[in-house]
Every structure is written in C-alpha cells, then in structure tokens.
Image (spheres, rainbow, N blue to C red):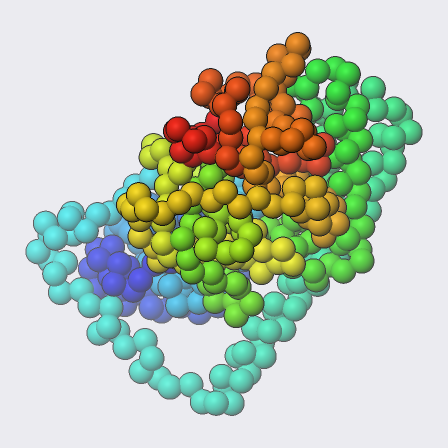
Amino acid sequence: MEISLGTIQELAPDQASLTAAKKLLKPAKWPVLGQSSANNTIWGECQGSGSKPYYTVADVCDHGYKCTCPSRKFPCKHVLALLWQFSDTPTSFSETDAPQWVIEWLGRTKRTTTTAANKENPSQTDKNINALDVSSTPISAEDLAKKQAAQAKRTASNKAKTDTAINDGLLEFQQWLDDQLVNGISEFIKEIKDRCRRIAARLVDAKATNMAARIDEFPAKILPLPAHLQPDAVYQELGKLALLSEAWFTNCDDVDVRRAIISAETREQVLSDPQSLKVNGLWQTVGERIETRRNGLIAHSKWLVNLNGESPQPALLLDFYPASSGYKRQVESIGRIIEGDVIFYPAKLPMRALLGQFKVVDDDSIVSSNKETNSLQHLQHQLTTYPWIEQMPAMLGQGKVFQDKQNRFWWSSHNNSLTFALTNQQINPIIPGSALDAAFIVSNGNEAELLSAKTKNWGVIAC
C-alpha cells in the first residue's frame, strides 16, 4: 500500500492546493493518523482553526477521499496533505481498526478525481509538486537526532499503552473463559453467538483485534457441525485461545504472538524488514479459499508450494477486501506455476507471505509436485510451535479419497497406514475412487479440508 508524489500531483486541482497542503505537513497538525492495509485506507484528524478537527480519509489505491472541511476544491488541501504524509512517512500511520466514520465512508460510493479529468482542465497543467522544494530548508544533524529520538519515544509510549490495554483485555478474557467452563459447554453452545460477541467487543476495545475477530467467527465454525461433534470442537478452540493468551503473558514481544492477537504487519513493513525471508523459485498454486467474515471483509486465501525445494514448502497469500464491493473476479489458478520471489512474514515457521516479482510459466515439461511431507510429524511440529494455530498445511503423497456409509469423505494413503477425516461437504467427482499422486490439505489438528489433488489423467485439480 503506497502512493507516489507524482500521483498526488495529478490529483491536486491546482498548484495553490499543493502549496497549501505543504503547510500542513507537520505532526502537530495531525494528532491522529491511522491506516487499514486490508482496505487500502488511511485517515487522520487535522487540527484547523476551529475547536473541532477536520476528519479526512482516502483510499491509497483507487484515490477516493472525503474531508469534513468546507473547501470547494476536490480534493482539498487536507486530503492532499494526508496522502503526502503517507507517501513520505507511512510508518507514522498506525495500523488499527477504522473508526466508525471511516467505516461508514467505506460503505458508500467513493469520489475519485481521475487523471483524465485533470487533463481536460488546461488550468491544471502547470502543477508541479517538485516546485515546492519540500527539502529546501535542510535539517541539522542535531535536529534530526532530536526528531528521531522523539519519534522513538512516541513509538515506545504507544506500544506500552497498547500492551497495557491488551494485558487488561486478556485477563478479562481468561476470567470469561473460566466462567464458560464453570457454567458448562452445553449452555455455552446454546448462547454462543451472544457470549462470543460480548467478549469479542471487549477485546476490540483492548486493541486485541485479531483475537477478537477469531472469537467473533467462532460461532460460524461450531454451529454448522453435527450436535455430537460441537462440544469437542468448542473445547479444542477454547484451549487454543487459552494457550494464545498465555503465550502473550510469557512474551508479548514475540512476533507470532503479536500477529495472532493484534494485527499483521503491512506490506511495506514486511518488505523493509531485514528478517523477512525471500525465496526465489518455481511455485505452484495448490489451494484457494474465499470466505466472508462477520467484520464485513472477504478473506481470500491462496496456497502455493515450492517445486524447487527438497520438501514442499508452503506459502499462504492472504488478501482482504470489503464484502460491500462484491466478490472479485478470480481467474482459476489451481495448478498454475509461476517463477519468482515469495517474501515471507518473519516467523518461527514462515508461512504467510507476499508475492514479489514473478512471471507465469507455461511449460509442459515442468512436473507438478509429488513431494510428500511426513504428514503426522509435520502437523505435530506446527502444533508444537504454534499450539493456537487454526489451520496447518500439508502435502500428502499417493492415496485415495472415499466415502463412508454416512457419506463422509476420508483420505487414505496408498497402503492404508494413514487416514484423515475430511471436512469437505462436496468433492470434485473425478477425485473419489481415483488413484491420487498427491493431495494438499489444511488441518485443524483433528480433521482436514482437501483443497486440491493431483490425478494421473487430469493433473492438479481443485476440490
């Protein structure tokens, strides 16, 4: 998520607006700056001459915007200054939940000033952001050191406040968890929606946004299950959440724990982090899933495996976009092979990743992956490292898929030494009964969802 100064220059209605925006590039003018990488949105409160600040929001990708100021110029100087600051110092924008006024804006039609519209107005052809000479007043080494020290102090202060709020929220969560166990799981299941919603709202207030979202999705995972399977599933998930909360109190600076409880890093943070692992090679898409979440976002997951490595290293590409925009058109990509860079988020077991420079490989001589992970050992290793994990990927070797008398699907290895119960309600009719060279699953520790399989006659196909 980024925007160039050239784009801001094109968006500006005239040179005077750019000059006015430059005067607002002061941290004191913007006591509140936030961003949501899931929505490509930034926002801020700009202190004007009145008692109330101007509320300003913009979409960094499609360049929609809104400001509460009375200006007749579109975009106004506040929008330009907001985008300008994000272009110069994106780290000054905290990744956080969008306030209600931003959420309401996201649900409406965004006003966008297009480059084409600017070109139609000849009075705008003289705009030049470089003519403002932002760096004309050089900053001394002493002032720069003071500025960096002040920024570090603000960052440490903000982190301390966040950690304190999360500590309080997780202590309340653990008390809530004890209450559910004392009152009984059967009663919990009867009121699961209301009970989960209340504690999720408390965790949002405590800034534990990712954990809150997970709890808010909890009922949707439990209620569709057969009644006799629900208690075990509840115990399993509550146990994972308890372990996650304890992991926070053990080491709240652990990058995996913070990501699971607060939020994931932005794309820019991952790309600039020297600890981020970059792997170049041939990658094949082996799984895809699109889910609508209760928070109004659609989660699009895509799994890749590395064809070059000794083992089928998985990579999860995870994207979010508003449900109000509808499902994005997706090109069927199961089995597709690309060549390029995959950049992993820093982690003990790198899994979530970003796609760097790549190209689609159309070469029939490339053989899809048949490499098998030691499934049980692999899943146990992931559970040991992240006992709170929701889904664990694994590449299975030769085997078959069959249905039992209750019409439930199962995967079994070719020698019947390993069997997985599958959560799939439906499976591509080509797969059951066929001899499979490989299969890709994501498991919750007890069951697995089959995302794709490789057949001798049809290649890699989605389930």
